[in-house]
Image 1 (cartoon, one colour):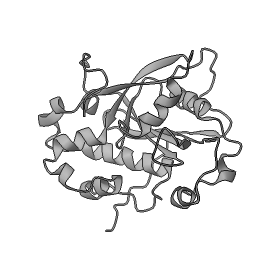
Image 2 (image 1 turned 60 degrees about the horizontal axis):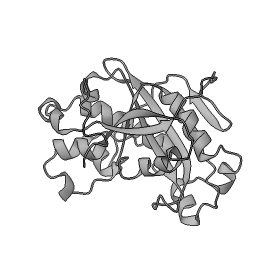
Image 3 (image 1 turned 90 degrees about the horizontal axis):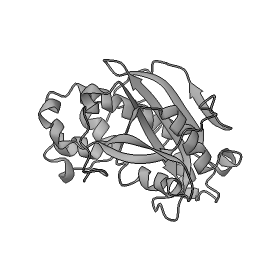
Length: 237
């Protein structure tokens, strides 16, 4: 997997030096980004030397189409939840405000989440800005030689790191973002991390520009929660 901007070498590596990071996740109406749409966005901010969990962002997103029954059952996002939610572009703009200058971190986001996001940042005349992101797939390909011979879902990675949260529901954008935050904290403590830093790319992508008249990163249906401590409980497999 290659960085989006191969000609740019970052002056720092976020895994060791970033001051602020946002672990994030999307839920969607399906897997095919050209035909499907976003239904939920969530992010959790980490900062400081020990990457402590800070404030969070969550919103339902109106996909402009019915959510298939199987997806409703998997994600528990119903048509009634998204009926009055912001459009994908509105929600992504508010998410961009929340992210600010932080580096993004997510699971398989290069191939999945950012394909959904790019559909909207390519809109004609839309003002955008560049953000950096790190993908779990790059991190663990570098850390674990057998990574692509094993299952590599978010649950599998959490189990291997003993980073799961038994009290959190999976396939919910906020729960998955919290799980990713704990996975990042475990990555920071990996004894092999410094050895493989040069093999982990930092990608670049676009988010909607932050409106100049913005006073708050909230929007109809979007929620910002102040800093809180999430109870850590390892999964029982």
